[in-house]
Amino acid sequence: MESSGSDYDVIIVGAGVMGSSTAYYAAKRGLKTLVLEQFDFLHHRGSSHGESRTIRAAYPQQHYCQMVMKSYQLWEEAQAQAGFNVYYKAHHFDMGSSNDPMILSVVENCRQNNLPCQLLRREQVAEKFSGRIDIPDDWVGLSTEYGGVIKATKAVTMFQSLARSHGAVLNDNVEVVDIKNDGGSVVILTAKGEKFRGKKCVVTVGAWVNKLVKKISGVEIPIQPLETHLCYWRIKEGHQGKFTIGGDFPTFASLGRVLLYGSPSFEFPGLIKVAVHGGNLCDPDKRPWGAGVMMDEMKEWVEGRFCGLVDSSEPVVKQACMYSMTPDEDFVIDFLGGEFEKNVVLGAGFSGHGFKMAPVIGKILTELVVDGGTNEVDLKHFRIGRFKSDF
Ligand SMILES: Cc1cc2nc3c(=O)[nH]c(=O)nc-3n(C[C@H](O)[C@H](O)[C@H](O)COP(=O)(O)OP(=O)(O)OC[C@H]3O[C@@H](n4cnc5c(N)ncnc54)[C@H](O)[C@@H]3O)c2cc1C
Image (cartoon, rainbow, N blue to C red):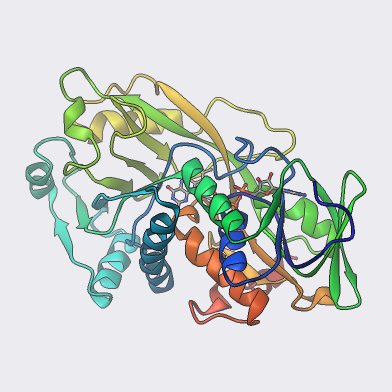
């Protein structure tokens, strides 16, 4: 354990995927870096644990599309440095009503970014996936090249080991209870009474963001902690091989009133992941560990879309996780401001779709610390100020 009173260039609070990737990019840029995590590293009480997360470039917003394309490159670079893989290739397939505005925007974005895509009617979908995916007559499917799966806990481990290899210090079981401005530097106070001093601080505390940020600045950002579940469903006997990763089965999302997503069979042989985007409001410290979200809608979807080849009676494995949801589902990447000015940087509100972009987000958070700005994206999409009327 590091002794109190140490000096760091940057102290990162929270070691989920965002804090861990930031630690890697900060240490790689030569910053004396400290990470403080309240629980054990790789615990299962936040948002970054588990087997898999989907990566896809199919976004309705141009800036996310570009951030994902940059992330593909950064995932490749980081895993090459680590010496093991966390990204596994797959195509991606979106489906939804033919007049769904999201699908239409994704098509437009693919065209603008020169990403090959195929817009398919029901019978073309049936043909492309040889009877494994069916959509209603008034839906369309959109197939794109850029999908894939990231191994979640393995990716967090990767960033933590890479950060250590560049000299970062990472401490777990250290809860940060306050952050003070102290004459242009930042003092971090822990529940055990330790103090750490840093020139800058990055706060990446996931669903706990308002507990900490309200304490230190009085500002309450409208980010809601939601409990949700990843569900794995049993593929019927004899059909398992048709849904595996590495073949032609894609990562997928189904758009509309209920938004579902999933990935090919990979982490548990014979099971396929399908989950609902959304969740139930929760207190991150008093979780209900509830039964699941929109189970009936999921069962109906699994039965209808997978042509009866997947058992829709119940998921076989359920893994609980938390979203940090903003009202517009866009991230919060900004300086905290106020008395901290540019000394405290916030990365939060990743709204159930941030994991894929963790490398570029870690890079951006580091650039905000070191350079005071970034060229990776226009931060206007992610400013805290956009919620001003909600404060
Ligand atoms: C079920 C589910 C499915 C998802 N699927 C996808 C997907 O397919 N694709 C995708 O791109 N994204 C997906 N996401 C979103 C993605 O996983 C999250 O955006 C991402 O993991 C958020 O990481 P984080 O580091 O912000 O939060 P976390 O992982 O929660 O990390 C925050 C850390 O801060 C620590 N902390 C909190 N308070 C303190 C404190 N006071 N002191 C010290 N430490 C503290 C916490 O213990 C925690 O470890 C999904 C999320 C969930 C829950």
